[in-house]
Length: 322
Image (cartoon, rainbow, N blue to C red; front, top):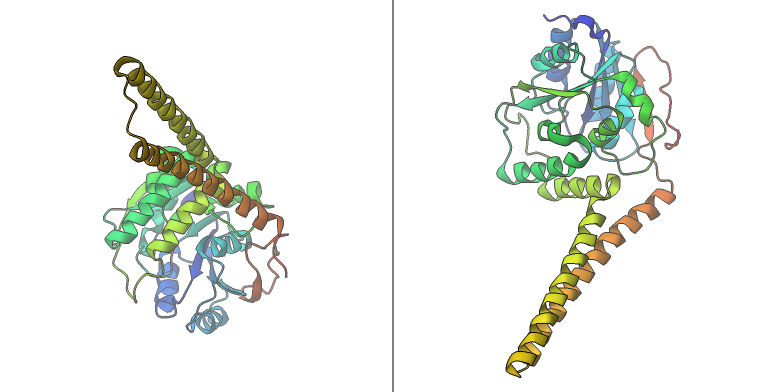
């Protein structure tokens, strides 16, 4: 058994989506590793299987386990936000419910955290993902570079962080959530440690390429102005291209007396500029759409039911109805 060391009491937050088959083993292995100085917060994110009955049963049998049942499927990061806000420990460890990240690796993250870092990621020594998911995950990490720098390459669901960091985004609201972006706003003291990464124990991943690509888009347009800068650069390049072509046409007309062939050339130029304009409008529209959604004051999550622990009510954030 491993002692948590100077990190104090630990809250292990697990977002659960159709994870009924692995929950019992996951909790048992976490308990064996942390030896009583911890709590476990299981957040059911609208699972379609028996995950919530399993969570309720485990919480009734183990007083250090609490369960939050979200009103519907809000998404992994929204579920994480709910669990992080509910955590009572000094340090929070997050990991998925599929046992790809062995709980036995938690002490590695805690040991690195004790070296003075605020956030430590567990970086897989060999990622056990399909090629398409790995490609999509790379897009997500690339989109995080603007707010997190080089550590973005180590970002993953297995992380340890100091609970005090959540104070900086205590009032954050809205349906678009990225825990890693919020942490990037809060601190620059990141680190990572290599951990084992296993194959999934139960069924295919619930993360499709489309979901991960959508997450990357959310990170880019929901928390960064980089796409707008890219659109501005694209507009500038299109203008320069147009000027170069205009100079070419005028020089050819002056020197040779022959104009450039009309329709094919004109059609190509119109296609270039129209494409640039439509792309720019699309990016602006994406931002306007997200602004519109935020003004609707949609909650990041809503908790239907809570079980376990000592019976204290978990505070509901200002953006989530109780």
